[in-house]
Amino acid sequence: MILVTGANGGLGSATLAALRAGGADALGGSRTPGEGMRRLDFDDPAGIDLAGVSTLVLVSAGYAEDDQVVARHAAVVDAAVRDGVRHVVYTSLTGAGDHLGFALAHRATERLLRASGLSWTILRNGLYAELFGGLLMWSADGAAVESAFGDGALAAVTRADLAEAAAVVAADPARHAGRVYELVGTPITAADVAGRLGVPHRGIGLGEYRRRLLDETPGLLPFQPPMLTSIATAVRHGFLDATHPDLPTLLNRPSDPLETAATAASATRPRVAV
Image (cartoon, rainbow, N blue to C red):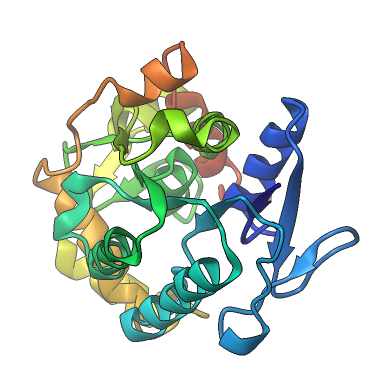
């Protein structure tokens, strides 16, 4: 049986759906499980139950500080060893993302897997097209998008494509054992997204972007402003624009993230009364 963690989240739910669409015997796990899911609370190591699981798709639990994320992942890896899981597929971060503020937890988890004695596959996922579009900011009148990305491009990838790739690997883990895949897409810029939306793109500096995150963006957790700023500066200075053949090879088709990024940006466009 294949078990997918984070099955109520975007990537986990899409991966589970892709596995089931392909006829795999797959189950979802979550801290807040729905019907037919297994309860998995990474903050309760003694309660992590992976009995009967042959292949575990470990979707990164990245919404926390690094020490908490690494502790959660370590608890899952320990449970996998204890319960006889044969293979772990881990959704990591693209190698080009080592400059990002959340890379360390991914690399630490990769190290844990390599040292665990388990069979593993590491999926180094690029940044989501949905995230790139969602990070674009609209002018107050909704007539232009603004960003600190400058002219830099991001080899963005859609969540659906990453889920499909994870399902391909998890359905035949022996074929992909010991492999590290770089799953990035086609480079796109903020201007490309703005052009698809039919509006201009206006650049802002990194300092202004940080100020907006701190002063004008309610609900962010303390670690998130530096994390988001690290994405902006990495894109701006050309660290995340490299392509790689792994994703189209696994999917047997190219990936086109631009429309997905534009849809995500459009969803945040302000409604201006006429």
